[in-house]
Length: 194
Image 1 (spheres, rainbow, N blue to C red):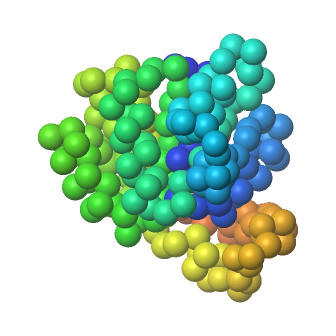
Image 2: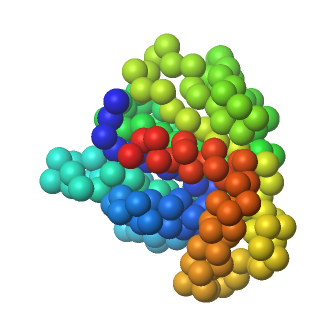
Image 3: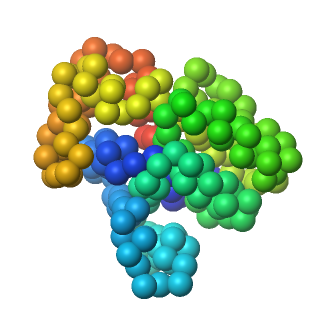
């Protein structure tokens, strides 16, 4: 099993949520925002960031969290790297359940086969005959913003990311207290790679 994990997140709030969970456990992680990649002057900024993360001198960094800027980009980015068969890292996709059919159709179109093997209502593993690493795809039952409103009654501010951190911390704490099933499973999936 590789010692590094790339988490493909639908958006920045999902990446922040995972980062907070990892920070609480003292696990080194970094977030690459969608805007950083878009504004980069590098030829292939995404590949450069992943290669930098995988370099041996970066051994303490265990997780790279990628804000993909939407579910379509999240699925396509994961599938591109999946096809590359890079076994130096494990992948986790963290995306809304509304993208499940899109994921299946896109994988079928690119790979000519279904790669999703259900483990639970939310968690799927890749059926890996072409890769030596099993990747995890986690579909939240509803979009994160609606989950936060439903569980703690607060809105995630779309303008100020720093103000979202205390809201996400409260959300995490409340999910743990109430033992919200999908969140508890997500946390196990993320921390199982640590």
